[in-house]
Length: 361
Image (cartoon, rainbow, N blue to C red):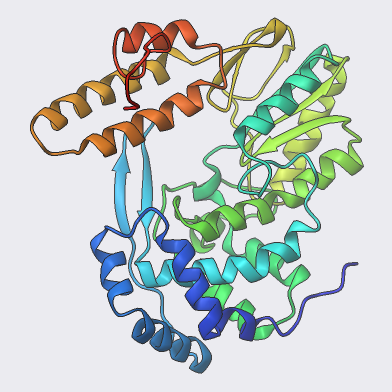
């Protein structure tokens, strides 16, 4: 049993820690009104936040909810900037404690990992096994159980004030999509009495999501003995040469998840041959190491590109903003075989792979 971490709170609630956290939270967002207002009175705001945390007067603010329909319907929640500073300070101290126990093949929201490394790892396993069990969790973030998550934090942390702050952050979560499912041992009212759901968009939610599924990672690697396993948030895959073994693993994983009050997404969980084309983390993976972008991704980018062009002509968006957003998509597309696609989209323009500019865009 790992030693529990103690005396963490002073390291996250000090002036210097909060100052560093504010700088991290403000990256790329300094022009936004809430961020600019905080930074304009930075010393005063940090001192006030330090006093609130150390005296127990800190209370999280209300979330701003943004409803998104593309590529699928979901609610993205934005915390007030001062709360985001606290989130960064909390994760800066707590994340390293749990990071030491995370398995190698967990790739979400970790330094040195990310989607592209997860895809490369998936392709490595794909080339060594005949079948893959592709799994997805049903409404993962809305289904995360608060009581279980708090218990997970207490497995590694014994600092009472740090745990109390973590509980505050969890309890302040705004209502998410309802996931009223029954699990073994529930009575009629159990799904309605347990608090669950974390806001999508929080740094702490990303950290908590890894903590919550760390047990699944160790179950798959150490109990099932899966040699090929990769997970990115709630999208994970197990590899084997025998489809019957994968079927047995699927049943055992489903039973394990019941203890976490989670369930597999029935429509997105399947056993397929590794030679078959499949979509994983935003790319269509094909035999021979070829990758392409899903048609929906290309369609959404074309629509955004037309919108940016119109807004640029109207003076609602700057040239620099257009370049930054297009370059971000190109950086993503460059991880697939998209040379012809990019040429077709930007033919003769700034971002055409064949364009030889006199100056950069």
